[in-house]
Image (cartoon, rainbow, N blue to C red):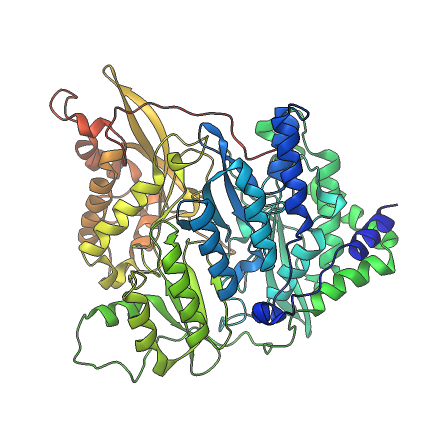
Length: 622
């Protein structure tokens, strides 16, 4: 029965790419959106307004279609646009710009899962946004709700010197196969796939399914990690087996989803992610059940179903990289740099935002955004830049809430910088701690307690002012901030992470953050350890004081992330040997003056009113 449904689904949906001259760029891109879904959504809104559809039914429907309720106001929506693998074209960026100007707030937001979000869209306008997205092949379908969310893929996939092969076609084939697929329309909760390009680049240990490419005896395959995820309770994923050939990727994925669908906790909203299931029944039992389930899937899957997946996979270029594991990421050295130019804006940008690709003579360029925000006019300039300078003619979103443009020739880099910097897109610091991550926080989210979004921007601005990007000691370190414990800012995998909360000092409420140390990403990624609570208006002071102690206490050429890891494991060699020593030194920094003498310390960033910890029903699940 399942195979018949899947075959019918594959036949009923038009997956052909757009071929009109207007959308010529989409000839090499997939058509994810369906125009008819716009009208369907508009009709549902009418039924809801006429009280023919109750609030819970409508809420489930709109979440399934990617419309997330805005903070404390059900009349507005956040539309989460899926960008599978982070791949997006100039035409699509220009459409997002136009839709934001017409129906949103004139800007867009790049999320930590490579989506693009439009905030504060009136409910009656959501269908018009869907229509516009479909025109350029985009969709928000299943970007929210109890479904398979946006499939992530490392933004370096295809250009990473250390990758065995490009995982992009596999990520997109998985995204395509499960989009609108009946097997995953009513899961216990959301479900996430993350593909890396190599062991270093990727968020594979914090996803329901994380995949690291590898090659064995000339056969492509993956190391598959299951049961990871971030939230109020976080877990690192477990390795399923030493080698899963790419021919078993589909069956492994289906088996995992079926097992979770059948055994996942549908009663307790707080404990119904797959990571809880794995934790509660134990990894060895879950692993055994899954391997048996995969045998059943492989024994019953139909030839047409298999061919539909293979068809999606073969639309990607599976042979655009050579199988190699010996190359290393090179340090960028370009003839266009004047060695006497010093720390000019261009050289600052070049040293942190430009990385060499494995393709000789080509470079990838980061566009560093402020906590993921980009205006409509900047989106248009960015689109022009891609068309003019990128051989690939597209960009990638990144988990650091930035963009990456690839396949740029060395002699074009000064022109790229000139175009970007003239429009506020030339900030340096992409591969350093300067590029601070912050979720949307209280600017739009119902669950947020603090304004993590604004705090991230404050930190980034201060770091640029202090020229932190010029200091190589802060390369490979990160600060990530969430407005609540739910980890949309991925605070638990940051060198220094923060998540928002509230406390009372005397008779006054205060926005506060719990600080974590030594989180990391990649195949060997670890979760950060909670250190102490810091008032919101003291976070920046605390971070700068940590920098001061680091410079004084580090050994040799240690970078900040290495020193933080050492301290968090009790291996410090100076005055600060462990986190307790660190806390003692930081306690005087976090003390607040009396409210009567300094009331601003008791307010959150981005507001001039007294702080109130106000939340509403979360919309992470349908």
